[in-house]
Image 1 (spheres, rainbow, N blue to C red):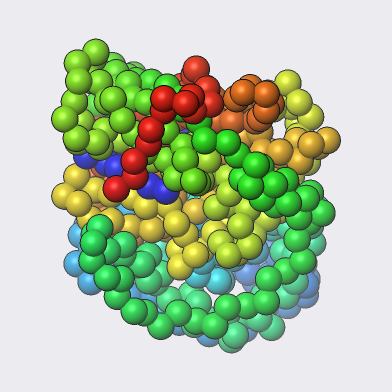
Image 2: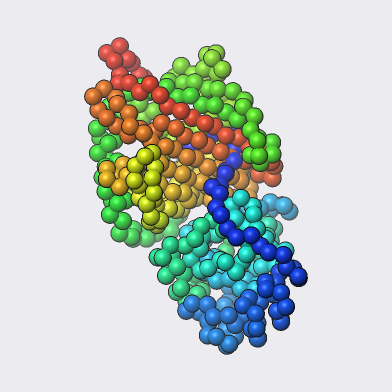
Length: 437
């Protein structure tokens, strides 16, 4: 499963309504007139005495937690941005503590110029953020301890708020080593080269799966076992943006026939703007693979060790679905990013998966790469796949019908987007022959 970025690749976030920041009489203060400045609620003295669940006593200063220093990455350049996603554990005037899936507990310094905003870039009031909320913290690669911006992703669930109420101070010594800079996601060897052996930490016991996830895994396994060999047409429209996705320019259209046989997919009869292409579709420019069937199977596979959080229910494809947020560590990720220079990376992932409440089939998947190393040429990558009912022979199946990939080049405003449609599913006929090399 991979995204080939022979061009420029980028991520777009969903809009989220959040209250805007009102006018302030002094920077960093809300409400105005606080003493000392920058405290909320007002009237605290000494500073840093606001009671946080399970961690502070009202009016009594707590000793600082001995957090380790995070050093800039080797080769980091000014202006390069690193991003960390996780659950808000604590927010004070000068400090934010984030619990991440990849790096554990991380502490960030807050400045007057630190921006708080939503996914659309609109400002939000930091006082509205609560422990358990999901955030993205952006910092400069040469100063990984200072937050340049804090992005509100979504409200925390009841379970996340309960988890965020655990004392931080008690867990800090154990969590401290995880607060060091994230290691680069494991590099992916070029085709034909042996993978380098690496010492991975011992795997933790897998938590008991949610009943819906457990059933979805069974349904996916049954579907894969009963999947007939078939052909389908794939049409990919490619776009480029030179202003961070504010507008898109259509580049071309790539058409191909996808053949599925023995659990493998192969592209053939590739055409660029109607003309035959010699070689695979990845030779034509920005290309992606893996959206077809392997994405859903990989996310649900116990071997991937994805962590799932149930968010609720909503409609997807006209069906009632249970929505989960998932996280996958870099060492377990099988999503491959390939830069224009051929550099390959398996990034950590976060996203959402919609599972039919009645049939337990996957209806929709959204995934995005997180904690991409600052040395990698792309800093954003996202994939969306939607499934729909398809008849292949006499078998009614739920198959991919639409997908979209987006990405951006690091340090630029140049992005690319692939819009993919699958159609004309059909079973292999007697004259069909597929040869996989």
